[in-house]
Length: 77
Image (cartoon, rainbow, N blue to C red; front, side):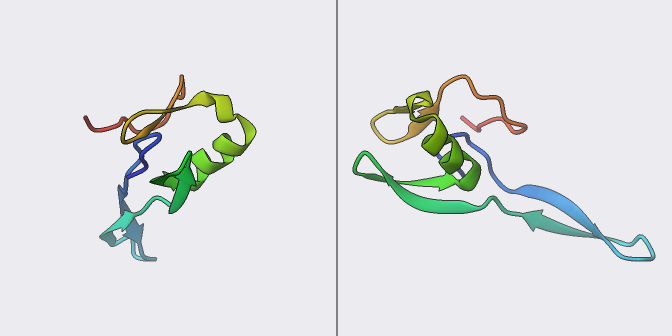
């Protein structure tokens, strides 16, 4: 789970030619990166945002947060 935006894995169906459904999990591309001296697990889309808009990240005690960003998934609290 990304510590910045809260994105996690998705449950998907793989479909064969005969349309048989096989459940599978699609994982987020997580990378470990140092941000202000702290190691955090962050997805690659958040890494691109960190490069282009570094002012949009707020670093708290244990996590980093994105300011005003809408994602498809909601973070689990």
